[in-house]
Image 1: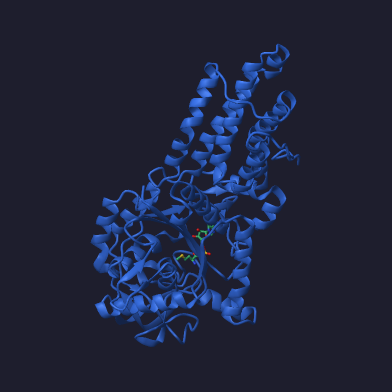
Image 2 (image 1 turned 45 degrees about the horizontal axis):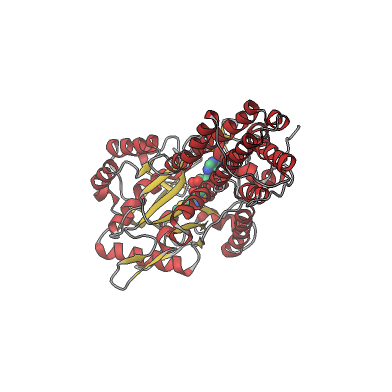
Length: 500
Ligand code: MSP
């Protein structure tokens, strides 16, 4: 395992308020950051999120709101930060692409690539999709519709600057082939590999003329152009944590050989992160991230959740109604990381009642009640275990190894599997209560057996609590407080059943 860990989320567009889909990448990144902080120490983990503030979308949204783009961005940034605070997203840094540390680095990167000859000027004719901010060539466009979003495209012809990504295609294919964890999950890796082997990359247009778009970072070598928003945005991952020196060498504590660098993204922005970004880095002489993991979409019915489709659900409303940890739990548990999920209140309530109220909530509550009843609230010392007890003790010892493996790149950062493993222990413990019938032990005054049994339950709960602390930080804290060191402090049930 690397000594340090640097994890990022995409930087979110500020043209609309955050919805469940945005919160998903932040919640998964937060869970990994918390897990690594425990293993590597707090100072060896860096978790970055932020906002993508340039480009046509933002310019347009600001115009409609009769504000400047920056005034408009300030309002939405405040919403994002408030939401992340509410959801206990423990980011270490929040980057905005309008900050000078960022614009400075973008300018420097452009300058280096231009001097190297990786950026050249050319006249371009093609189709342009404004909402996607993407150029398409003749062959990609049918009936003047964008092949991606199916909205109307317009024909344009203008002078622009291009990044020679075509020159790096073979190198990239080799890199992906040699590094099995570079693009995850495997389905996305195969998708990129097959795209690269079937298509010849055309060079990437990295500029927009100022007459068409003024809200962007001017190119240092052509002030009449601004940087394409995707070039600008991708650079955030390095601009937030380091600098180029005078000789053009990039230095960063979080982007060195000792750090595992992981980008979590949604599958909608795979091409930019798995093709353009590695090529930009390589051309700049900077090492690549270790892993780009593209997760699936949250859908409502069979449509992707998004503002433009009008089906966006507010994370704040859900978290307020069901609790922050229940919300986090649902997203992390309901689908294996990488697959699409379906969001509905019914599905959330079902999981809430089964996994949270019934399984873990019930286990903690009955253990606390028995400690109160049989031992005046004092947690007994460990004792001799029966065969079933030994089995549980073994499971307690093994659990962290299993969940750690699941939460690694090689394990596909499989949050739901890690939770499943923890729930196996919880359910074993619940079953152990039923089988042991502690009320009989008490009646028969088998006090040693009763003590050993209760203590094992406490150990199981402590271990489960420690494992869920990355996923549900508040719940883990509450369990720890209620259990205490030696004397319990029983509080309210963790997850009272929802009847709806
Ligand atoms: N600004 C770009 C990213 C630049 S990163 C250098 C962008 N922003 S976005 O706000 O449109 O979306 C960002 C991310 O939000 C997606 O990649 C994905 O991680 C998440 N999601 C947005 N909608 C989603 C769903 N419906 N489901 C799951 N995640 C989705 O793209």
